[in-house]
Image (cartoon, rainbow, N blue to C red; front, side, top):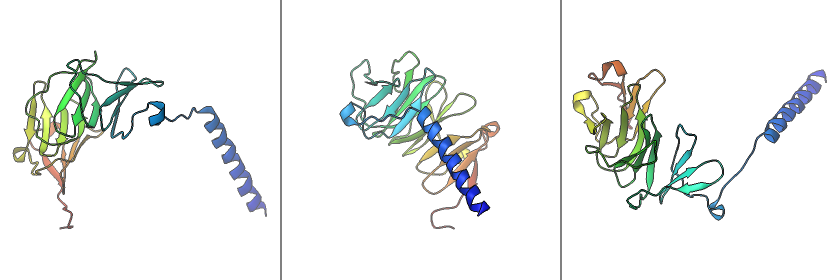
Length: 203
């Protein structure tokens, strides 16, 4: 009986804490009827505090109250935004039709740099040296400040397609192809090593 009473009191205390936290938080939602973007497939927050949302029709910026559609200076429609990443240089934007553009800190979309593999851009990652990596349907690439440099067999990445790229807290660069996972320590940029070679069949 004492155990049951203690359990009930504990549950009541937890419910009280949850209710208090819930009451202190501001919960909101935005739908299409509220002029909010739909079909959001990518999110990123830049250093100025803005939240950026990549959708099936364009790119939106959110200041916590209102959504603003990003309009490039040349008026060219962006199309489906498939990947976003906030870096020291600005916001990198990847597209489902392929290609990537950088929106600088002053809000200007920079010209496309050459060398990025074709196909949908799945993800970006910035390493500890400030270089940006991109996983695209037709390969993995690294931006050296002037253009994209494909990463291939010479560095150990043998996949035909890159599905994701990530830099962990220790600086290791991880990349995934359709069937394999690769890892590269930053101090060994010239000796890309395969961390796991397990394919989908389990061999």
